[in-house]
Length: 160
Image 1 (cartoon, one colour):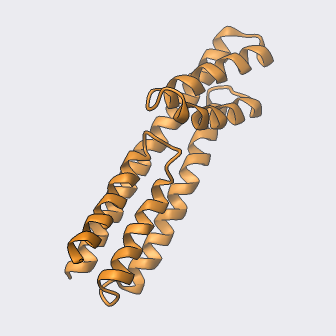
Image 2 (cartoon, rainbow, N blue to C red):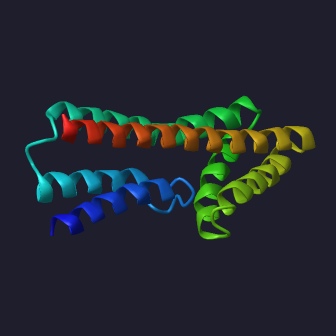
């Protein structure tokens, strides 16, 4: 039984990484499912209160990185509020169409079209599209690093 539970923990952690390229999977939630399986089904005495506080903090940082970095880069590269919203919607739609490439292509093209219609300037529309791409990539790298930190912290907390 313990083997099956550990397999579920590992699968939950792996699915969190899959969520980096398939945003329709709630990646950070999958990490928490792994933590909860371990805590409630394997050993409820090893994970410290400091672990839970740290994981909650890292979860908040991860959730904010999606919105803050995406928005920041679209703005930085001259995009409008409509472009920011289009980038967010494009990432969601892109995860369903042509995954994993859709999450890069669809927001890029959608932001370009929206910004071209609003600003009527090819260069500014292209810059905003590049900003949406850079925001997504930066957010993805940040989430990857945070997921690695969460797993390493989990391992250390159960070993030590």
